[in-house]
Length: 155
Image (cartoon, rainbow, N blue to C red):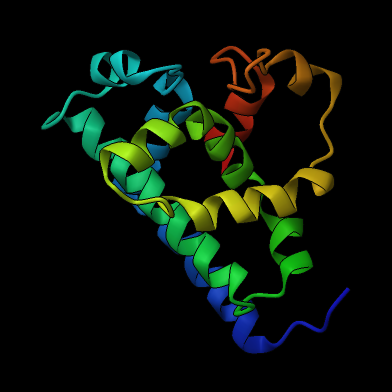
């Protein structure tokens, strides 16, 4: 494990405070419970452009992409971060089926690449219980009834 500085602890606490902001908390709860998509039609049905749900999706993705960028740049020691957060991995699993389509649609081959990189680093660290495995379907999408849902909503 690497050395953790007081600056890193303060940044981690700041990120936690941001997660507790009422609108972001509401967005995270919505995302965890409802964003279970496999294709563009599902996204349009679940969170059409201009809807509150679309804003929630964008809030969650932009928050975790920002956090991933901070961790990927070494501003928070990786082991310290992963000891205290696992939600980003579940978010990545939920959006993974859409990444190719979104990158093409936005002409952005690096869309959510920070989150992708962080999720790859998290994978070996995520201790998945049998109930969490059962809560994830074959495509890797967290099942709304799965164990990850309760874990996300509790943070």
